[in-house]
Image 1 (cartoon, one colour):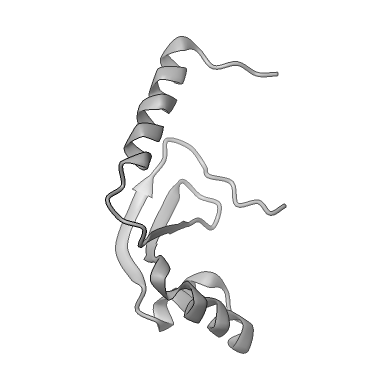
Image 2: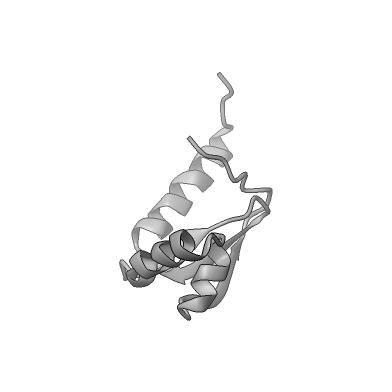
Length: 85
């Protein structure tokens, strides 16, 4: 198994604390597999998913249909791979 350095472990813990301190349950995250996470309004996810099913579109266009994009992104220092399962 790969191991993190002490500094890397400390950074991961600080990052997790920052994520845990989010003042809202509304903020959702999505990626297409690049270094960015887009932020969207999770309270609209049922409508977003219904649009995806009905229109056969991907997540981001459905987010736009429901005006759920916050217009903010988080940039990671490397790719955030988009994987399933």
